[in-house]
Image 1 (cartoon, rainbow, N blue to C red):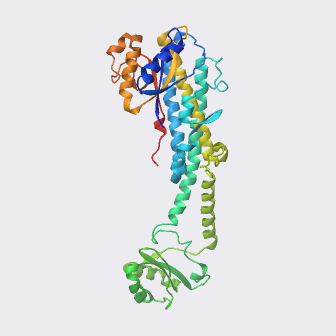
Image 2 (cartoon, rainbow, N blue to C red):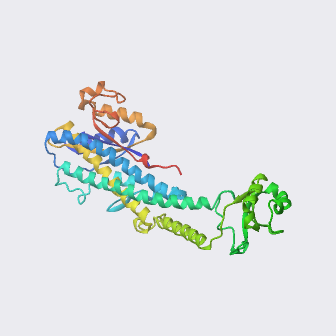
Image 3 (spheres, rainbow, N blue to C red):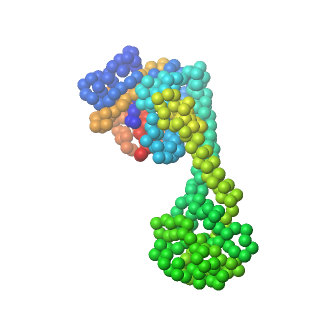
Length: 399
């Protein structure tokens, strides 16, 4: 991914001359940036008062839409978990054709069907606002449902992992390990440290009266301990637990119930299956990826694309509004998309300043790093030309 500078400058005799001057200054004499024309259609201008108010509204909407784009992308990374390396190939913009984000931005074409240019600028911004707000609300609902599913599954997985002191024993023990349906006898399960196996064998029969001789059996081991069964009379249970604790043997409270154990296993299987269904087949991009993914990842792909496209249209609206406010009427400006050479970004900024400083006499005394009261500009950056940044790096994730 990369960073773009979306700028505009007033047309010379023709807008093509404005473009040619930029190309000469930034690419033909040096390698400062890769440039593309940024096509903005003939939008309805409206009144000056509306444009001024809309400038502030669009700045807020830009921030909001960008935040939704990042949230959807980040949630896709969270959902894909161990396959986070697949995130980038699933962050696409489906603007009639399927593009990676850089290609979509550099080949930007206004979507006339979604955002009719016969509508006022305010109406178009409201269409985008409603659309992206709906995506944001849907994301919260879907994320909540998925997180609940994931949390319930993790809780069950924790029960089936960990040490013998805490883990579920349902997948370890068998029916034949227990004396069942006896009025007098009960089988108990005891966790014994591996270093104490010999002590257990010597002492378990004498930890209480009425322990059945030679009834212990090692059922399972982990790295630190072993799980032993032992059979005794029910009336001796409390005394046995007390003496076992004194000898550093841990009696697990466990009753063999086949129906409960079966239900737990079925619940684990159901949750695991439901979770996998949410993003099955997510990694295939050789065919249309919006059609091959599970429902959650498919929703994330589609709505990431929708939000990203809306975001770039917001940038186009901002360039149009700000250009009219700065350069006046009739509408005559050229919007241009620059992909700076990272090594020459400072030099590029200097070249652009020299090229356009005549547009604003105050620019000579304004430092871009200054916090200027009353200027509602993105990141407090001010230049004599219209400038907005499109930072696709915000969509990068460490994998």
